Amino acid sequence: MQVKAYAKINLVLNITGVRVDGYHELETVMQTLALHDVLELSPANCIDLAVEGADLPSGPENLAYRAADLLRRETGCREGVRIRLIKKIPIAAGLAGGSADAAAVLRGLNRVWELGLTREELLKLAANIGSDVPFCISGGTALARGRGELIEPLPDLPPFGVLLVKPPFGVSTAEVYRSYDQTVDQIEPRCLKMVETIRQGDTDQIASLLDNDLEAVTTTMHPLIGAIKKDLLAAGARGVLMSGSGPTVFGIFHDCNTAAEAAGRLGRGNNWICATKFSSPTL
Ligand code: C5P
Image (cartoon, rainbow, N blue to C red):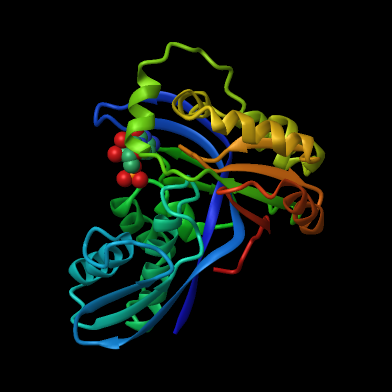
């Protein structure tokens, strides 16, 4: 069986508090992109993961492996699986690539192993793997709260074009959140305004409401992010933002062709550039 694992961006990411467990309370609007990894699942006696296209561990440090292992432990299932993971989503990029892989393993093995887990049961398991994994189970456009695990689906957005620019370095999400705690900026949250706008179908407004409380933190560590934002705006983006804890920056364009044309004009040295679009895949 083949399953796809879709990347995400955050259209808004507002931090509304710090929890006693050290995690941050979020209000974030997340959006699935058409960009995806591919996972091939085939029968085996144990959990056996092989990764292609990226230098990633193939044991329990990999979220795809962890998802299969958790599923076996939680359901008592004795089956094994061979997972061939073909990476297309850049790693440590703020695009939830690892979380998407984990979610695809949960969904795929639920079918392959005939476990019959409900969406709610899958979401609960997903939250044990990482904060972005529940959204990756749900997909499309959604509001996420809590530490990211409380998902409220929103109406689909049009397939806007998206240009992703990934600087030639990764960032540690934990480090970005830690640095956020040392900043004192009070930023006006925009998440609920974005949700209202999406519910009203007023999609022209979306680009003007993009907002990420972590962007200033990661940009202080890596000023290149600010330069990429300027370049994307100059190339015709209707709105630009860093995704998640970064460092990937995205620009929103009218459609995929316009995004691809802008990609041709930008052609940034070592930076990884990809034109893709909003997507609401049937998961
Ligand atoms: O949940 P996940 O393992 O993906 O989170 C990675 C790190 O990001 C956490 O260890 C934590 O430091 C930070 N984080 C946070 N608040 C969230 C999500 C993540 O502080 N809501």
